[in-house]
Image 1 (spheres, rainbow, N blue to C red):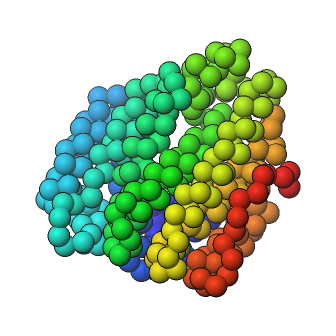
Image 2: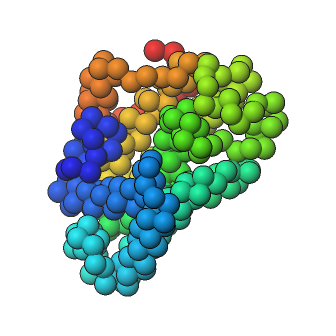
Amino acid sequence: MTEVRSGTPRYFAWLYSDAHLQALLAALFGIETEINAALQPGLEHSVAHVRMTWWGEEAQRLRARHALHPLSRALLAQWPASGPGPDLSGLVDVAAWDLANATFETRRELALYCERWARALLGSAAAAGAPALPAQTAQQFALGTGAALCELDMLLSLQPCARAGRLRLPLDELAALGVEPEALAHPPWPDALCARLRERHGELQAALARGCEVLRAPAHRVALRGLLVWAALLRRHSRRAQAALPAVWQRSRWDGIGDALRAWRAARRAMHPGTPTQTFKPAEPS
């Protein structure tokens, strides 16, 4: 597993998955990394666009089951034999949005961005990782959990993204708060912005809990336990970022130890259906 840094929520998602879902996640995370390589600082813009165009074409080939890239072929090897291949066009779409440093004018635009990512990555992982999961339930889980994961990732990287020219909050909300977009790159943030961020963290923590509750059957929770671990760790990070405001939460060595324990507990709950699942509670400072 070389595509994801050890100790991150994605790493623990991979670690606590069974062999089939591990292979799926390794391919999905690897493809996402390859696509996002077009966003690396200093890369010639024309080269970035060539990479993005190639991956857009590869996403079409992947859907038609005629992939060229080794990671795409590895993903197809884990995909159900019947029907079309996975649709990863959403990963290309959100990367193209970021390459253009496009801003979200409204909350709806931000939600669509997160949904595109969720359908591509979590939708693919859920559909192929738990083939017995009804399609409607898989979509519910992918959109509910995945969109929240995507937005939380953006909130947790709010400052560095702003410094790179990528605003992760809608412009109309910033205007309503009386906050200039440039302020996102320079914490501590204004009180009005902090209040909105605390509120949004709470809403996304609740959305993650609701999304995970869609997986009611024990067999489905076991099959997708790695994704449940991912959600549990993002909730933990969200609560810590929420409590750190108006400062930016900086992950420490002790947070890494806590993450390892939380990941183990989340995987154990999924693996032992008789163990009560974690219910959502309003965040408390820790």
